Image (cartoon, helix red, strand yellow):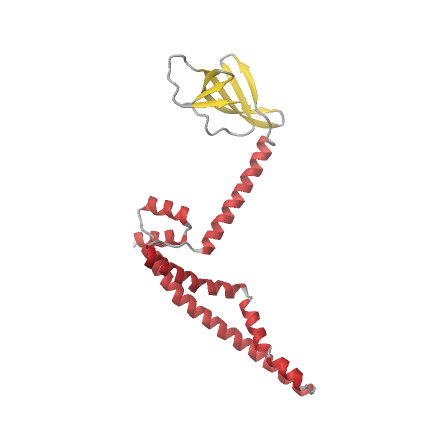
Length: 228
């Protein structure tokens, strides 16, 4: 039961997140995705038809009431009666443009895609709304992180290199993810290694301070970063 539940959760996720979730929990989402597609096709299709019938009946009853009231109060020409009879097209247009209708249409369509994908490729298909929710959430997080970085570290600007007693210190407004103790850093023809990384106040903003020491002459250089 646990594996099926986790497999069902994985089947809702888009491809990158689904693969990671399935790997971490040791589940196979293809089977649950196919069963979910079957449920979405039948349940979603029934809900779509039921919603359409209820909407058409409600609007038709309203239009019929209005039409009777118009007939009782004034005489319509034949052309007006014919044009009023075309209101059925308007009902279809009203129903098909409702957001809830598109959601109900999506359910059986996604269900068919899930079943076909499982039948042909033995693979899972993510849920569109989950995909949209995750991508919007990730976008908002990136925007919030960018705003935080800008507020703390300021706009992008050139690095500054300071000479200190134990070597050099590179002050950068943005992190350098490829700088770590396992790489050798070449600056102006001399070789250094990263001793430590810290944050320092630098005027109105903070900076990443990379404290570098001279690289021992007798050690082998395994990875080199040329800094300019």
